[in-house]
Length: 202
Ligand code: GLN
Image 1 (cartoon, rainbow, N blue to C red):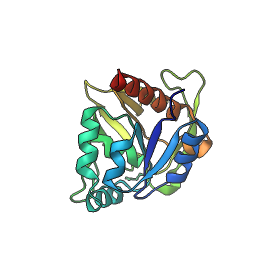
Image 2 (cartoon, rainbow, N blue to C red; image 1 turned 90 degrees about the vertical axis):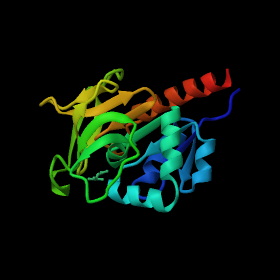
Image 3 (cartoon, rainbow, N blue to C red; image 1 turned 30 degrees about the horizontal axis):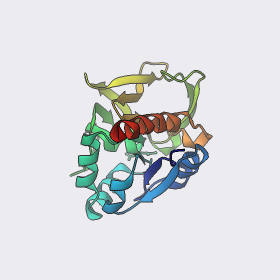
């Protein structure tokens, strides 16, 4: 029997606990990541929702930004939700002064594209590769306004606005699946992480 996949949840700010609970329920070992030396041992990583500019700043203060960028470039499987998607985007619209992203996804995202907290909403979405509709909660969510040639849109709202993308080992959603106990996007991350672990071991 192989050991459980070790999946980090970037725990600088945001909704860390919900992601860890889903990962554990799927049989993975969830690790709250705050220090650079924790990164080396991971089979995958979730970057949670929260406030992308704060997570960006803290990642620099904690020395996580550069090692994380290197791991993303090497193919670490990463799933970013909401602020986490913003942090994975190569380009952002509506950034605060000096705000950086880790990058990796060949997309542009517009921060707070649906308005403020009161404009939060829930909907059901068809996501490519997932059979039944996904319960999706949008909270001050970003919209993916450009999908570059390396990335692929895997879900859109009724008006065509792209809200989920995949690119190699990277997955990003504008919405929070964890608020509704939706586990299938995390399951997808685990599949990718399992495949990568097998490839690295071969
Ligand atoms: N608006 C937030 C940001 O720009 C994201 C909101 C969220 O993660 N729920 O970081």
